[in-house]
Every structure is written in C-alpha cells, then in structure tokens.
Length: 501
Image (cartoon, rainbow, N blue to C red; front, top):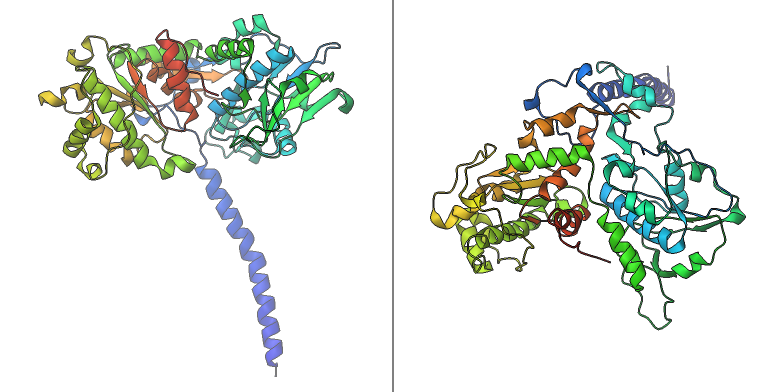
C-alpha cells in the first residue's frame, strides 16, 4: 500500500509533467494570437473613409536619403564631431541644432545621423548603452520585410519593421545654407559607420554622460562661485573641446534647448541662423499643408492648436492642458473682432455657458497669444466644407465660428470636447483626408526601406498646417508645440524666430 510520501511524490511528478506539456502550448497560442493581430504601432493618416490602400501601380517611390549619396571614410587631416541622438523627432531636431552650432564653433565636420520617425523610439540611455543601441538600430539585413505579403505572419525580425523609418535630415529641411558655412556629412545609408569603426582611442575624445543632464556646454570659463544650474550638473567649457587634437570628438546626448549656454555674439548669431533653417521645406509637406489650409478657408483664416495628451505628464494633466489652451483660443477669437475683448473674466463667462462643468474652477492665468490680423473673410466668409458642427447664431458667440484646426496625438480623446463646444468648426487631420494633396501622401513609399511614409509624416503635417493659422496655441512643456509656435509659425509669417536657451 503506497505511503502518503509516495502519493505526494507521484502527484508532484504528474504536476511537473502537466506543466511541461501545457506551458509550451499556451506560449505557442499567445504567440500565434500576437502574430495574427500584429499591426504597426504608429498613428496613420489613412482612415476607413479613404477606402482600400492604393494599388501598387499608383505608389510613389520616393528617395528619402541624402541627395549627396556619400559613403563614409575617415579623411586624414579632417577633424569630426559626432553625438548620440535619441527620443522623438523634436528632441532629435533640438540635438541636431545644438550639434551644428558646436561643430561650427569648433570648426569640425559634423557627422549627421538620420532622423528616426515613428513611435518605436530609442529613449535616452547612458553613453555606452546608447552607443551600442544606435549601432544596432538600422534596418540593414531586414529589408526583405517590406516585401512580405499582408496575409503572411511576419518572422520575428520583421515585427517592428513598419513601426519606424529613417529619413535624411536634408529630405525634411534645407541645410544648403548651413553647408555653405560649415562642413557637414550625411551618410548614404541610414547607419552609423563612425560608431562602428571609430578612430583609435588615442585619436578620439569621448565625453560620456551617465544621465541626460550631465553636461551643459558653455562658451566661457565657468566661475567657481557661480550657483549651479538647476538641471545640468556640469558646465563644460567649449574651449576644452576646441583644445583637443583628437580626430573625433564623440559626445553623448545633445537634447535640450538650454544645452548650450552662449554669450559670444558670433556664436549666438550662428545658432539663430541654424535654427531658422529647421523649418520644413519638404515639397510633399509644403504642398499638402497649403492644400489643407485652403480647405480650412485659406492661409490666416483659421485658428490652430497643438494639444498633447498622451505619454507621461501630458496624460496626467490633459484636462488642465485643454482648459488652458481653450482659454487662450477663445480670447484670441474674441480679440479678432474687438481688440479690447477677451479678458479672463469674459472668457470665464463664456465657459459657464459653453462648458459649465469646467467653469466651477477659477480661470487659469491670462496669457497673450502672438498672432497676425486674420484674413478679412475669416469671420464673415463662407463656412468651409469641412465644418460639421452647427454654427453659433448668437451675436456674442459669432467669433467662435472661426475654423479651428487641432493637431493632437489622441484624436478620439473625450478631453477635446470643450473645443467642439466652443468652436463648432473644429477640424482634425483625419477630417482633411479627402483633400487630394493630403490623400496623395498615402501613396508615398520609401525607396530605401519600402515602408509607407504617410504614418510618419502625419505629425509633421499637423505642425505644417498649424503654422499657417493666423494664431496658434501650444501645449506647455511640449517640444512639438515649441517648434510650431516659436519657429514654424514665425517663419511662415515672415517673423523672427523665438529664441530659447
């Protein structure tokens, strides 16, 4: 007769055998479900209203690499500067601006990395880790993924292939005037050969950061009695970099509008000139944004806002963000017909009428919005066809009938409801999907990677459209908003850009 110990032993063996048989089955089932449901994780311009995807014979294969088509090699006697890009598009753009300025001051050739677009981003890591991630971040060896049939489950190396793409910076912006003033290099491939095969250690100066805010580069000698910066740990003299005879100066992160602290007039002028060149000149974006603006009534006939709602702190503060932007937009609309209108008290009274649930809170601080005079038909002209809400009939609300274009990362968010309550002609990018020039972006395919470009151009098109409004309001703390308000909108209206840092 078996003992209790024997029974327990047999039960344990059966349990182990059961686990060995069942767990692999469950794992396979979960993996199969993932593969069957896999879709790229980026916001797309394409909506169901656009119908089926374009046929292959209507695709526009577009080269997004640098027109220079340069292969890379270390030239004896030439000195170089490189850095490690990371995070979203606008963080990459700010880092590029800073790198261009440093390279000009140091008289070094800047090795420009490609721009990485999409939601599958490389976030900040300390120097050595980010260095390694970038070396392995390219799509070399997986280009076959673009040729897979849509009804075929992709192999593992293709799971994230369509979640991001690379383009050359000079495909997006015109750096020709910058290149006329300093030496810059765009690689023909979207790789980092200078990271893979750097000069020998004795000929490379590496400034390794361990946190995102280790170094702030300054064009003066920091005093010992100067109070430390509230964010950056070390003020690193640019003169120290200039004194290096190394062929390559390899920096880590350069993100941050305050990353460079410049006092020399020549350096400040160089930064201004470089920042001014960061406005989009890509013909596809320019053409589509102009057509979208015309669909809204024309240049300077509509208001615009960038409303950042997802990710980190923006998700937590979304209601406060929407309310702050709402106040500034309403005030701006009221002032378009009466320059003395639009006080916080007046806007708060309208809030009690239009969004009473928010009016129980005290009004946010009053912030003036930079604007131009709206085109004369903006208020009294015909209603654009993309306005679906019913226009206000009350005389005091008539200024709010102006079209409002909202660039946002969450188009279905209930938090956007206050805008629709106040502005019946609230329009999102998806509402402009039937504009032929916007729709045409659906046909663009990267010649280098075989990836449809429309999903990655959507936020850039958002920015380009918003810049054509007669006034634009952004989200506090958003680099996207700063780019639109301080640079794109100013350049679109022939004004000096707003300098920060």
